[in-house]
Image (cartoon, rainbow, N blue to C red; front, top):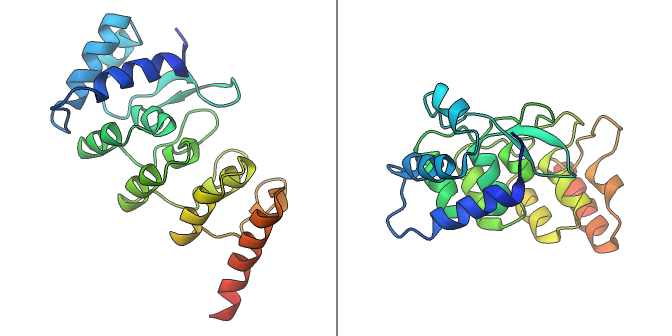
Length: 190
């Protein structure tokens, strides 16, 4: 059964409202919600409720893929759930099955989400199936704040995707291009 993003959003919205949510009870809370909504519960149960189980879902561009709970929480920007999942041992560099996106690739751009993932070892320059890094995606989305945050955390603005494009090549906005040009000059000054 494929569950669209909005269904996961509802589950996580209910969970995040629980006052005593933490790393010790996050899986139990999610299990309860998934069982009551019949969301991939049997398959997850067969996998012993592993924190990095891949759930069938649709996150970006209506393309079906399999994502971990951390991908789903990062996509909807639920920092409390993200921190609890990481405490449970969720892999911050787990990749989705088809598109090879990490949680950082699908994060919606909330700086605290990005920082939580990077502070726990997420690879800032991880590449997906298309060769895009999180910086490429942030530029495509036109998210200047996220671009700044990724650059501040050491994202390489010179990396090319499989189409041979750097993040600057994908920038439409002049201020975004200038920000990336400045970042490209940084390594040369050192």
